[in-house]
Amino acid sequence: MIDDLLHRLGLLQGWIFETAILPLLYAFGLMDYADDVFDWMWVMMFGGVAVIVAYLVCRPLELWRPVEPRGDRKAIRTDVTYTLVHRLGLIPLIVFVILAPAGYAIDRALMFRGIMPEAIDQYVPALADWPLVTLAIYIVILDFAEYWRHRLQHRLRWWWALHSLHHDQRQMTLWTDDRNHILDDVLQSVWLGAIALLIGVEPAQFPVIIILLRLVESLSHANVRLGFGRVGSWFLVSPQFHRVHHSLDHAGPPFDRAGGCNFAVILPLWDMIFGTYKPDRSFPPTGIRSKTARWAGLGYLQHQIEGFRRLFRALKPRRRSPGPVVEPGE
Image 1 (cartoon, one colour):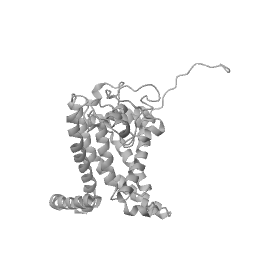
Image 2: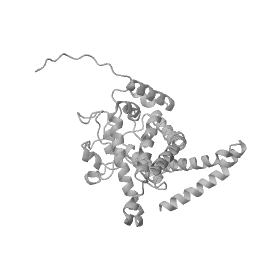
Image 3: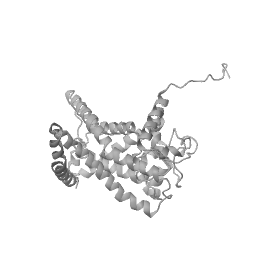
Image 4: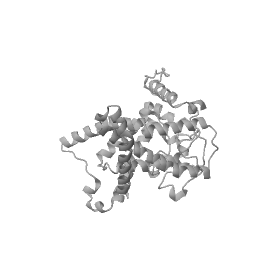
């Protein structure tokens, strides 16, 4: 199934390149970049597939049982812009131009030192006949890594400064998943790509894993009154589960904004194991109370600039006010 999908996408990639891209490169004298453009198209196409799949799955659900009416359409349009730019344009370009060569360099350095990450089926030969099981194992490992990446986004002050842009949104929809600062997205790509490289994920499997991760994340942000019950809540993050993570008001510690709750991307099991699970069955309002509602409605570029401002403020050394003098024994 996976091989068939990759084959069909490869045929589509070749057709688009030959009929539309190659003539333009020839006309502008850019044929030296033909191979690079062809490879970049592969990254962009998978982003497009992820967007289409997420829309076809999540939009009917939002129409079926919305949590709230679509009030702030300007903020939603900003989220759509985020999705198109980050999945089809800017982020794929950054990943290709910067991260791909870095990945090759790391791979060569590991091989030079005799360290060669191998696929799981190299360690467990029986898995060679079960590609879907191998894919599932990779997804579980990467999902575990994503859980900890998400916790760090809330715990580290400078990273929260960037990630807070994602939480500005008070009108959750399937598009909200991509409302991230560009630096935040690059860090996520580095994190996920490096771990995938270290555990030996095959290049053909990685895009499929990304599509599955993005689909679940789009669903978890969707404006739909949907939970998976007591049993299902152990195995898949639901819109209800993740909406609690985005709630305007967290309960007391450890579920305040810095501590956070319900960090999982796919498997809620991680929150249950590490004490960050909040079993709230409501659908609370979302956003950050300390930020005014106008932040959600900013345009893409304004929002990006605001992210840099928050980052610079977070990186500034904080002045410590002198506390009361405490005598020994008090």
